[in-house]
Image 1 (cartoon, helix red, strand yellow):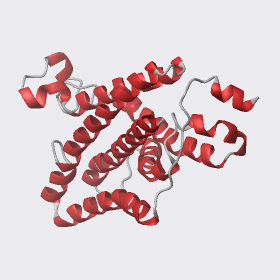
Image 2 (image 1 turned 180 degrees about the vertical axis):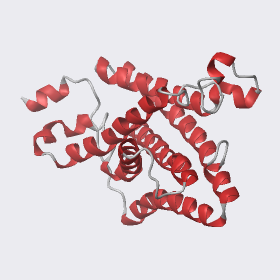
Image 3 (image 1 turned 90 degrees about the horizontal axis):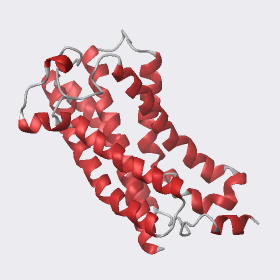
Image 4 (image 1 turned 30 degrees about the horizontal axis):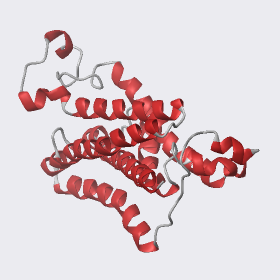
Length: 242
């Protein structure tokens, strides 16, 4: 019965190819190196730290590139799932991923304002803490984005664990891999989940310098972006093999 129900989902059979120990160590070292880079930059002084994590800095620019690469994989993956007759809700989730990636790229670039250099409309500038054309820096709206980040990052932590460890999901495991990141990507989602949980509950930790607290989120957001990108690379490779 379970196998028949799985076949009726319309999804190609998913599969996990085990990573070698060396590959896994290399993969998990990326988040550690990015955090270590922030620590080193902070130790070198304010200028170095702002170059690393500040607006239009190394980390933020790498976020845009990472989301763009993820988008390159997500669009054809969505089209192929649609063409294969995958369930509409799965195709819809991938479609939302496409829209979400476009939104994140646009927000990080202030929808082209930083590239073109147009002025911020007064109605937005008065409400935006950076006086730029974006939504996530508007007073009051930013808090919603922070909770949304926590929920999405939590999804990337909890669902892979459930798929890998919960026995009741075993009959459906090779289908759930289409919507759940592989467990090896948990270290890319866990930092943002933990950071947002902490920052949402402790909005003003007085024992840490303001600059460090305010800008460090860029590092965990980059790690999260890499997790999204790797997830879509995994999915595209899986689709090409099916």
